[in-house]
Image 1 (cartoon, rainbow over the protein chains, first blue to last red):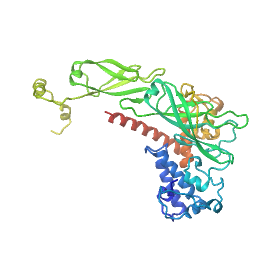
Image 2 (image 1 turned 30 degrees about the vertical axis):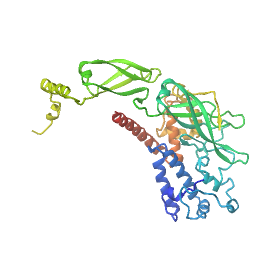
Image 3 (image 1 turned 180 degrees about the horizontal axis):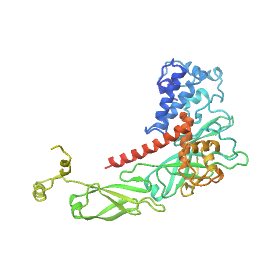
Length: 331
Length: 105
């Protein structure tokens, strides 16, 4: 397993005080929190931060960690010292906060897993789902869980199966909680939109006593598509057209999520003009529309004939494309 | 790793209609008192119902409240701050989406 340099992760010196550590953690946590951050790797970064803070904020754990010595490098192959277990007693009880179920092997080898058989950690796709300050009270029903799932736009349009993999904590015979991978094959209903949640009944945490299982909430994220840009149920598409198609009007073939359709470009179309294909967006009641954003493509002349055409246009059309700019200028 | 081959049926939240106070409590794993605290600062708002047991919230309230609860848990953001942060984050999402649209192609 790999050695983790917790000081480096938090960007503090090895002799940093508790306040410095707290400040560094808070600052980085704000930057990398998955709900706030736009950084691509925010989830993993945030997890790393939580783990580093879990160790460095706790004087006992920090001391133990420091005793490994300073010669280790981040990522170096690591094995805990043979007498580690006797030396420090973290036997399953070394968990005071954070989301231990998703901490690294390195952390677990030093401090053990989360304490007790009460599975409070859950991390699926997106969120650290530890219980909120014990405020949940005692429900017999199992906890609801939350995860994020990224699907292609095509799946949102047609509906379809999607396999999602989540880490969730399970208690072993000794009462230690460890993260286990679990995959679910989910049928995504047609017409889901970006940011929408879907519910899987009974797929959350197991209930206690007579209580049923909780539900699993999946937040849908649509993968960026090469051409289509979704906005709610509407779909936007940039549509390149030739100058003569814009000028004279034309029937052009346009891709939609449901296949190609023919549509009429009106005579005298402008660049930037929007056209709507009603009901061609994501399904629903009502279904979304597809918007075409016209982009006129000006071809480069490739030979003398084509250059002559441009010259003829210049002489015939007598256009001043910057007429508008002159109005506001100081004479 | 366990694997189930028959796909699980998923229910889109806005199709299933508004959510209740009870559902919010379960989904966010917090007590009703906490939910009410978030209602008071405008993180979420019931769209109908006079009494808490009759309250119905728009389906997107659930994701919003979960986000607010995570901000409190992970970043110590109080409800009032969460309301502001969520509004700004939503505005930021919208602006980012527009930038993508303008830059795309």
